[in-house]
Length: 345
Image (cartoon, rainbow, N blue to C red; front, side, top):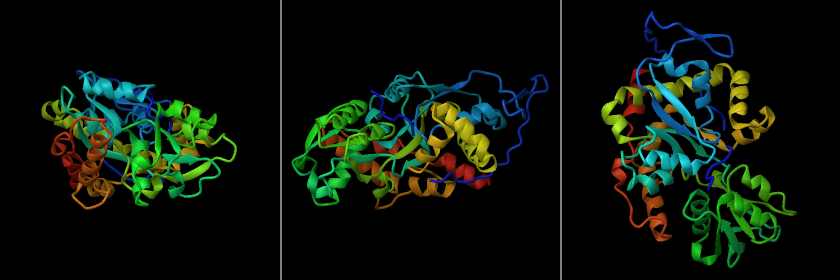
């Protein structure tokens, strides 16, 4: 199963951390010709990531030496299949992974080293969509229709939010449970009336004659947060490396702001798309500022606040029998590292 494949304006942050690198380590050169620090010695922490626009920027840290700049000893591990990355983190094979809030909730109970979100990379701001046939013009028209979705995950949740916004329930439609790629293909071939999908799969769905977007994640800010999640073990044993990861992320955003063309080339290469295609996928991904991170981690009464969103997501997943019970949600969110970054600015 591939949960997120392929993928807002990228936000600007400046972090000036000058760290000492051992004189015995020779500096390395990046592909751009600039001299970058050597990686600190010792066992590297391993962070998984996969094909989503809000996670591609980690490739910039690798290529431009930004991990070493922040004294972060990191190996980024690419996964072609998103679910494999989540399974690896839960099994203790990774120190961290890029994944959504709802997936962190669903894996939390079984993760051998705990799972804790320490950074919001982005929110889906249109890249998750409900695609429908030409005769469906409003949410209410979905009543009794066949909707293909991957049960219990982000676009199923998006469908539920859309239905609730019009006083409807998930039971008002006929759910056709399929992996997202298969769901899009089923819709494109005329087997269902609608589909919930993320890119590139909604591109496949839109190939059906007359098909169109009915609603997207843009209508529900905060509903689909994409995160950096690390193990509780890493936080307990190497909090400096957890902090270095967060610091590096904001250095990445600063690099993007100062070197937009070079950044686009790196991102497009990592995503295996053209630079022109990259621009389309950027639009549906809102990269978070430090202020937006702090707001997202704080308590509140709407989906922009992750403690609130986590409760709503947990209830949804229990209601659809995706998880047997809600985990302890107080253990999966930790804002200490974004707070420390903000304090050091």
